[in-house]
Image (cartoon, rainbow, N blue to C red):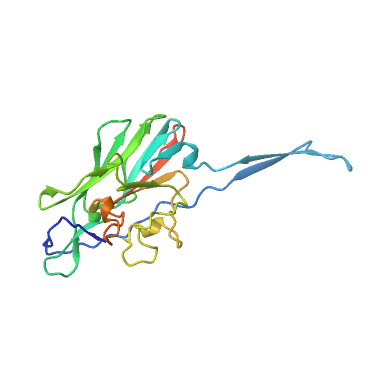
Length: 247
């Protein structure tokens, strides 16, 4: 949960509860192999020639590079499907009982272009299984991300991959999130994020996925504040080769 430092304490009287997230399959593919023998029928005492063929699972690191901890650089042409996992900016209710999610905007930039909106809404409007953006990305054309929230008809601070801050982070399966992300069993961990972490707190996503964490209410100088938790906007980017069918 996150309450904006800039938002006034008053908010709508009705609190909204976060929906449970439904994770995509996080089980990585396993190596698959075949064994052939030549000849297939032999006489006693004759040794056939055996040949193994092993196909190893693809991982996103084979097709992309993470630059600066916040930018994805494809090393070959790919497709990417982007989903919104959660939007965690909240304000306290005026009666001091509970909280309300506020509208948050997620943006995406490709190939040095302008940042474009791919989601705007509250956490209650997030559908984790829904693809909000599909893009064919070419080798060397970088993907960047940004976001901001809105309260009382005013935008909060804006951060993106080029802000020169650590407000946007990109991680892959098995990575350890920054220490600001609450531990797996911590009460402050958003319910929408828990399916994407294992019990040790490491990222648990598909082998071709990149998860994007955003902190939208605090700056780098406020990392010690409990509200700096990188849960204000979380995206999941699933990459596939140009020959892989769409989901």
